[in-house]
Image (cartoon, each protein chain N blue to C red):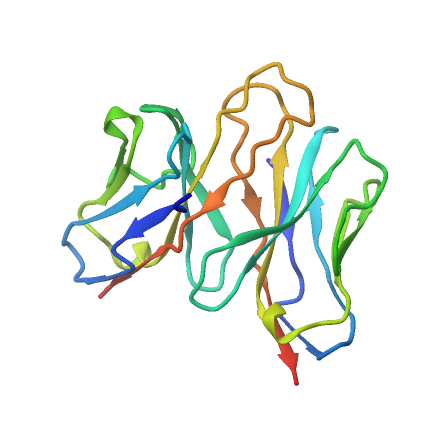
Length: 121
Length: 118
């Protein structure tokens, strides 16, 4: 099966511009996650979709970031307007749904995409 | 909130030798998962090994094994018989095992860049 794909692989924009990143999860994966790694730092969680609903968006840095997952398939992450500190690699991951109340061993692996490297000048 | 610390930004090892990557974490939860992910240069991040906190036995996957010390909150990765293809960025990660929705996010460390010397 095809893996998680992300587009574009690289994006260079100027401060104040808008950029939209796209993630296509593995077919059948209802969970979709966005993460970000700023240069030299840890990979940080941004948000989690279950199908088309935002389950957890506690990691979104501010209201310049807007994530959508219309129809519960692919997702977009828009940054508007972009700032210098938004530079980094944005990762998307997907996994199968884990049923609440399941046994501790019910874990579904998150599969990661190759990331989008965003540079804001 | 949980935190994951990787204190070795870079490590190197001679091909065919053994190397250990360190990871410590902090949590107040008793049930959780720990992971090591590998990201080769310009390639996707893949799961190397997983450990469930309720299991006392250390996980092993071929040449990769972990030393899980729950009381010390330590989770190191040992790579035996290092190969050139093991060169990558390695990330340690934590995930709650809570059965509620909304607890599936991964918390990562800053990563360790592993170089294999031929």
